[in-house]
Image 1 (cartoon, rainbow, N blue to C red):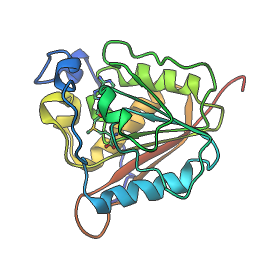
Image 2: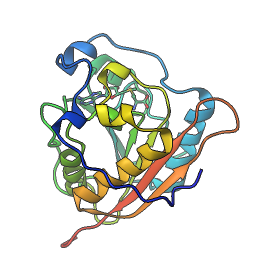
Image 3: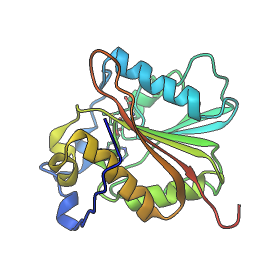
Length: 215
Ligand SMILES: C[S@@+](CC[C@H](N)C(=O)[O-])C[C@H]1O[C@@H](n2cnc3c(N)ncnc32)[C@H](O)[C@@H]1O
């Protein structure tokens, strides 16, 4: 898949409406101990993390659940999750700490500046109603030059995905994520990729590095 096309997005408030506008807290109250992509796509995510997230670093798994897909052989200093369900994250063997927070109610992250060496958002960016605010604050809590790996597939909870996401095709969604990162104003080296395995669920990623004026 080629990502060299140019897209211009003019997003409005309605771009971030969802079919289910009830509080996310209600939707995510019951834990789901299921994988949201198949094992081949999960392996593709793990390979991305192996490639980009620094072994030995402090890692943030944003929009986390009971699986983080981090390479088992890596010895991260600390892995922190932020998601909606306490029981899912309590059962995630790869998390050292976690926090329950609804980013659609409070998009600012409960972490100090430059706390993390890398971050990941797996199959979840499509649920954010204020993605630019979240990504800008993620830039604050990441160190200068730290990698951010955002991945997605073609399966998701449709009623909770934003209208903008539903409107687009797989390839265009990578451009939308790039648009969010550019609007956040603190990312560089934004790469769009198709990491779909030969069989099963497709897997796309947008990877970027944090750029800080005063690292
Ligand atoms: C499809 S699951 C993906 C979970 C995990 N990242 C994975 O790869 O399996 C979507 C995740 O997004 C999180 N999420 C959805 N809406 C959220 C919100 N408003 N604030 C914070 N996290 C949210 C949920 O906790 C849920 O675990």
